[in-house]
Image (cartoon, rainbow, N blue to C red; front, side):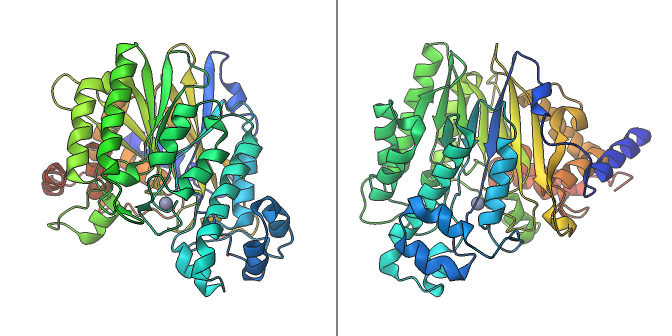
Length: 465
Ligand SMILES: [Zn+2]
C-alpha cells in the first residue's frame, strides 16, 4: 500500500512540474474510431477592460470590430491572479483547445463575463447608461469567438456573472437573453429551444452525434440562493424551470433516451466557503432547499436517464456524485476548472471522451497553462488523464463513488486529487482542511455534510499525511 502511495506521489510531482513534456496536439487523435470527444470549457470570465487604453474605442465600436481593437493592444502578456482572463489569455486558451481537432462539440458551462463588471466599467470611464450594451457586447464577443474557433456545435449554459444587471441576476424574457438567443448557432433551426432560452436561459436540443441522446442545458442561477431578478417580478422562473426539467426527463425516459445535463452552478455544498468558515459553522449550500429537494426527487425517478452532468462555478477541477436514496442510479457530475486565473488556479480545460455506441464517458483529459509556475512564456500542455492517474476505465458515477472513498481513506490518492484541484497551482486543499473538500464530493445538504465532516475529523489520522 505504502509503495503505491509513493508511486502516485511521484506521478503527481512529475505532472505538476512546469514544462511536463506531453505534446498537446495529437493526443485526442489516439482515441479509437468508436470514441467521440467533447471540449469542456468553463468560467472564462473575459475582461475586456484589462487594457484601459482601449475602453473608449470598445464602447463606441460594434462588437464585430472588437477583435481589431484588441489586436491593436500593446498588452500581450497573460493576466494573472487575482485578475480575470484578458484577451491574450482567452485567445491562447481557445487556440490551444481548437488544436484538439477531433472535438465533436463544445460544452461551455458558464461565466463568460468578468467579475464585478459594472463597478470596473464605471471606474474605467464608462457610464451606467452604457453598461448594458457593453456587457451584452462582451457576451456576444465570447460566444462568437467560441463558435468561430471550433466550427462544431457549441452549447452554452449561463453563469451567475452572465448578466448586464449584476451578479446572480437574471431578467427572464429580457433583451439580454433575446440578443444571446439570436447569436447561439445551436438554436438556429430549433425554434422551441430558442423560445425557451429567451424566457429563462435554459433549453433542450438533440445530441449532435448520438441518436438516442439529448442535451439539456439548465440555468441553475435561477435555483441559486443568491438569485434575484433584475426588474419587476415576472413570476417564479426557478419553479417553472424545474417543471420544465421534469417534463424533459419524463419525455426522454419514455422515449428510451439518455440526457446529458449542463449547468453552471452544481447542486450541493460550496466547499471553499465552508472550509474557510471552519468546523462547527453551517455549510454554504449553492441551491435553495426547495430546488435541491425537487431535483433530488427527479433524480430518484430519472437517475438512470442522466448520462452525466457537467458543471463549473467553483473554478476548480472537481467532481460530485449524487446518490439518491434507494435503488436509484447515482449521477456523476464533472466540474470543469476555469480559464480565468482569478482564484490562483492555473487556466485549464478538458476533453471528455465518450463511446459512440452507448454515450458512456470513458475518460477526461485536462489541459492547463502553468501561469503559477512563474515562467515568462508558459505553454498549454496535457496535465493528466483521469484513466491514467486514477486507474479507472470510465468516468462513471460508480467509479466516482470509489474515488471519493479512496480520497478519504488513502492519503496518496488524496494528495494526487489535491494537486490537480487548482490545475497544478498551489492547492487550497491542505492536510488540515481536506475533509471539507472530500465531504462535498458526496454530500449535498448542510446536514449530511456536517455529519460527514464530524466522521472524518474524528477519524484517527492515517500515516503519510
Ligand atoms: Zn465563475
